[in-house]
Image 1: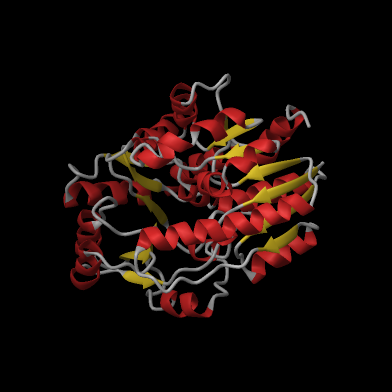
Image 2: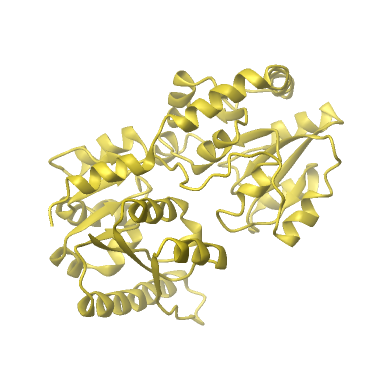
Length: 369
């Protein structure tokens, strides 16, 4: 079939859509992606797989008012994508995010489409209020976590439960200690002493994803233990305090999937989500799959979406970060290190438990065009 994958924003920032495109291509479908940007690396992979990329032009706004800027960005995308789909025919669309559907607007309802939704949006009334018509009209809905699927069915009065497509990457090198090809990231990583036991966190820093207690624990454990953090540069009090008062190695951002080169060189993966929303409680982070692909033991806090995996696979430890002391973290780290082969084995079993391409094949087989 001839499929148009539409994504408002950058393809590099949404690895599950990269996976979707590659899986569709593997299943011998003709795939075109309409998006704002990607990377040379993604372009090369897609070229090898005969996946076409069409870029829309992003308008730069001079205003500092976020709402006005967002409206103008959406309208710019809407104009360009509507023009493109009016001139080109496809069997159906694969809508890559909630933002994408809302930005296209009600004209989307005139077409056949699969709807890929990555977040729950329980704390965003605008999305909750306006997604219903796009949910109900979709041929199929995909979400990354099972409880989210049932919540969506109840919220939007859907006739069937959305399909669960976990955020497992299509490309995963699976090999440890890969060469880091990004020059800036490589220089930063080489500052870490050789032979270190590296506890690694990849993601945003804020009170909602608190690392302070474990950071202090690792600092007190001393050589060879260390913390490495790869996070975006942001301006908030937590971020500034963490950089000023806590010891860790900072690794600059690297676009997916090249960021896995850094992950391949660490020893323990760290995932942190707070209990502030249903979206967090039933999270489905890419990081779990990325860590598991390398067989890394994992430390995560006890939100339901992470605990559910830990019941099935003993990949590491899920615990209440708010109540875990420095001494507790030290004991956990020593436990994971002393039994690394056991935890690594189950981490790999987690990764191998899901076949993304098979799930997408089942989705396509039920789509009637």
